[in-house]
Image (cartoon, rainbow, N blue to C red; front, side, top):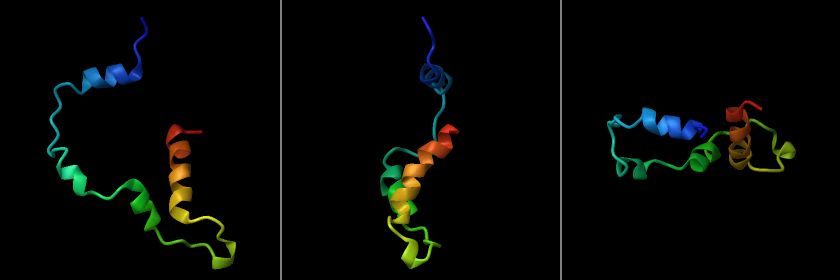
Length: 66
């Protein structure tokens, strides 16, 4: 039976205790809110789409290495 990377990661992190709890993370802004707050360097005339959602769509591609 093949081992999936997520299974290996779960086994690797079994004894890890984070210095924060899940309730501490509730006050953090969402990624889209953070990306939406980045100033847009494009000229107003060249903007068709807002920068925050555009960056949110590009992020998985960059992280995957494609």
